[in-house]
Length: 366
Ligand code: XIL
Image (cartoon, rainbow, N blue to C red; front, side):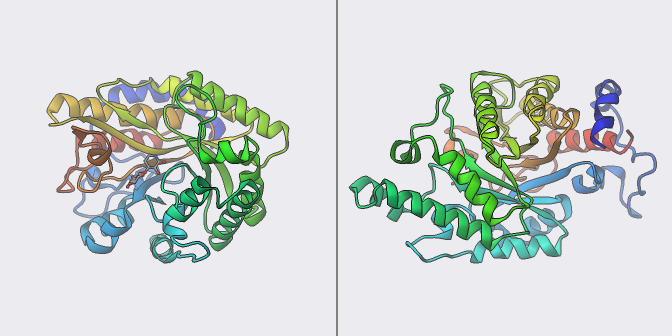
């Protein structure tokens, strides 16, 4: 399957050019849409078929309270990522008290819906429990103890979900925008070896899960993705069980995008080391309010990331960071920006959703 991607890459690019203006006819040889449905009603997971897992981050609160949201998660996606409820502050709010209840809810729903689950995330510098950050700050938790705490956390969490997570974001955002190891409590207290340790502990707890590095601003070739490439090489040379590289894909229409070929070329550098790749957290924000031009540019942003993934050989999952503007982290984090998702607040399809359908329709034809 993956090898044919290279042979058909030129053809795909040609087809994609016409796709942006073309109809959304069902793929030759693929099942016809259900009676009464037009091809444009076909959900993304169905269009992607076996070629690619199409995922979304899931907001657990919305999932619990909003049936439209919940139904759409099940219908549209073949993979889910917990937006927050697998993060450390949620799973161990007090030291030694593990709470996987919300995550387990999502796992059960994924099982019912025939979905795979990406694990996010075992080690990050954000959304850590206060007992941990305050303990380190006050000096109550020293380096030896912190290392033990990290080992315990990774072991507990990975073991809890053992056999049910296909890819884990083991370390998240460990390189900063100057392409240096990020200055976090992990680096300060434990030194750079914490990264290799995290992968080794995770692998021991679930030898089958694919273990990923994950970060933003690494979709194309730049100093930051170069630093990840060097890190990945270094880890692999030490025999560390790292299996994948995830580019988050948080874009903004005001910044412009890479080309699909640039994304594929960058992912290809990691694949040449033997790693899988994934696009893990796509959203394309804009200065509010949206207008037709911004929405069309947004569609382009989604498109290049999706095409980049499809043009790469081993990019096997493409995950959006939420799918409706009704529940998005963007307005709370980027002042004056929003409308970053595929569907609007009323769950109506935006041009970006139609573009994803168009690109995925072509997947069935190659
Ligand atoms: C965000 C969530 O979407 C928010 O709800 C939360 O308040 C903060 O974190 N990169 C990541 C994700 O790896 O975990 C972040 O998710 C978005 C940026």
